[in-house]
Image: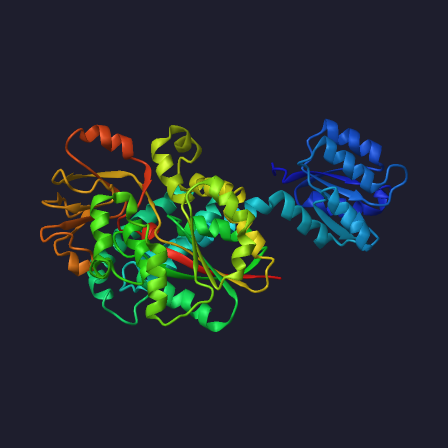
Length: 522
């Protein structure tokens, strides 16, 4: 027995003239019932479970638009396709205003009707089947690519494809391929870490390399300052992953023409290293030499590590002989209240040639999830974490700032992040002196030890262009999704930090980052 593809109600006061259409749909597996007026249609909708309604706009008695409104009052989720002889734009707008699903103009032909049925009754199934075939093909192509000699550009392409599939599967959870995708991402991260281990040290010395944190201002910001006299805004959102950005990008396309590129965070993928490298255009070891007094303060005060970003940026612009009048402005948004005050005055900053704005909320969200059981329940996995980020963004001062700036012709926005984060699911036992840094994805200190399967040991900080701090300091940088736990109370802290979003290590999620140019559509 053939299963029914969907139950359809066709409402038309000349229904006898449509018998050929109804027979056509019945032969293709749709169950079609009919009504000749709005009153009967409303009664049928209330008592029977229809999946789709075809509704004539011009009927005696209760007209199509009134019937449509009452159907939506009774069954707001039921898709209704209006059929009319009129092509009047005002009528179309009125129908759209009462939440019509689609619009067909008489005389309709069978293929139009069938296409509409497939769209509303089988669209998700057809989309899912096609997506499943496409992903299996992509899965095989990525698996094959992993066996070859990949470049930084190849890894960017692979990761963006994986992120595209993450977003696709957010919309199609019934595919049942999410675990397969997660397994493939994990395997890719295994190979990505091997790639970084082999090439990172040499990559740092190459002049024609794929851009790193130290190259962001030179590559993306300074050309905008040289190109024209527009006001340039430089937004850095702390700890924003590529998948989170692509979720936000879909919202911003309404307001901006968006050009997206990618760069790699330096190691460790943590704010004191990666964000200071962005603003200074210098390696951490160079910052140690160029700003020794600041570095001494860092040793004593962990919270002061990123207090000098404006000074770093101005120093970099001076080295590049970029003179700004008025001087650059810098804002760091650490809480919602201050964000609202900046939001209200954002257009006043458009008088400046350059305004740099650091937004810290996403980083706080990642750390807050580690400490809050409620946040873990709200965002139990990457998909929910993306959704939570989107929800924050839609109600944030950042979104309102960007919308305000989208109405300004003489504004260009460069937006990026300093590092991403990874959902840390596996623990790695680490041995270190008591003075070692407490970070979960990277450590510096004396006598550091960890299984080489789980971390990269940096014996000589100069190899990674990291600060020496002292002659005996080494670094450990976690691979894949591992996080460090000391042997003391091991099981307690292993459980406490498992399934938390952390940063500082080597993974695609932490290192491969978006840098975008937003140009208002006005």
